[in-house]
Amino acid sequence: MDILLYLGGILFMVLALTISIALHEIGHLVPAKLFGVRVSQYMVGFGKTLWSTRRGGTEYGVKALPLGGYISMAGMYPHSGATKPAGGMFRTLVQEARDANDETIVADAETGVFYRLPVWKRVIVMLGGPFMNLLLALLVFTIVFSGIGVQQGTTTIATVSECVLPAGSTQTECGPEDPAAPAAEAGLLPGDVLLSVDGQDVETFADAAAIVQASPGESLPVVVERDGAEVALTLTPVLAERAVFDERGQPVVDEDGAPVTTEVGYVGMGAQVSFVPQPIGAGAEFTWENTQAVAGIIVHLPARLWDVAVSTFTGGERDPNGPLSVVGVGRLAGEVAATDAPVLNRVWTLLSLTGSLNIALFVFNLIPLLPLDGGHVVVALWDGLRRAWAKLWRRPPPAPVDATRLVPVTIVVAALLIGMGALLLIADLVNPVNLLG
Image 1 (tube, rainbow, N blue to C red):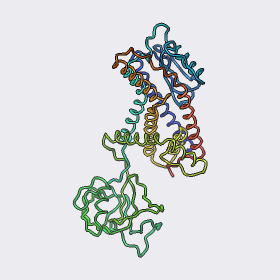
Image 2: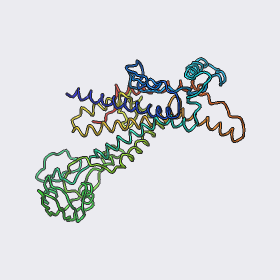
Image 3: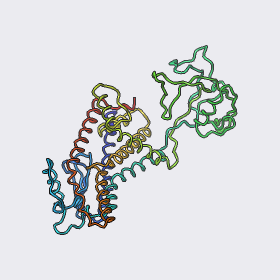
Image 4: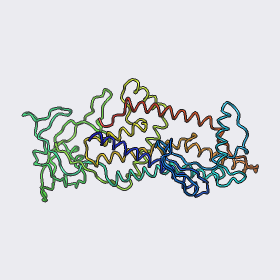
């Protein structure tokens, strides 16, 4: 059964990746057609074509490897007859790129070609793909945070400790010398619902905990709901040493790796945890935070890849916030699906992975280098800047920018991307990221 769940998680992520790529290409396709550009192909995946159909002059299809996609637009670059011959060691490659581009342009009728669009339209076409990934991420995170919610401690009490144990203790049973826990002494029971603490209404367990932790030694009036009736109790927190946790719920450690502790009020009660829907803007807020985090990874990508290489070949622990390959994401999805957790928890995590995947596609494609979308945006902007400069000085319009001259740069970038993919693939196979413990 675990194997089937594991494979189901991988299949879920493959499907999510395929949908994300398909929508990315639709983001390019729709504005291109609206602006009159002839699009001969819309393909999801690479390799052998598994299925295709032709409608409105465009072939729509799905290929064997769902690791990318593309649309083929007419006249991405100007006709080679309008540009200077290529030179240098990459002359053959540049000329091949020009010949392939020329084949998409109808002789003596350069209509419906991409490079003749106004700059702003070219930018919209190229940004349409990443924008679709951003939109999908926003939708997914809104469902995750506002539709399902975030796990939080509710006001319903789940556990009541019998005694107060020292911080970090591995003791599982109370001894005769251990002091009784204030919650048990006050008469709190599992299933009680906290209504107010010290005269303050509480909506979450965190509200109650904050009051308790700030009031060691003080008698606090507490009102709980028990079996449909309100019950008034008195709770006196004791001063206890407890571990400090960060915003993610992880224990804070000092320079030597020892847990950081602090003295707070303690009563010995634990809350039931459930999904609490967040305000509708929570998805947008997390999308922005995730985008910033991914952008930080991209900016420091060389250093991150070096760390991945070192941990892979030395057996060190991988950074859980570092880059992953498609295999790594699929592996995580499989582990999440097969883990011993409620179904809703697993769905929440799988959807979160899908949202993060789309954020990665959004940010990565904005890198201003060919063959990525950001590189095409830079070419369009440069072309527009040259034309604006010529117009300002009342000079004849310059020839269109011949991006085929950047084929050497494109080849170098593609080689680096392939190398990065290979490194991450090896790392995810031999030294995968461990998020689930």
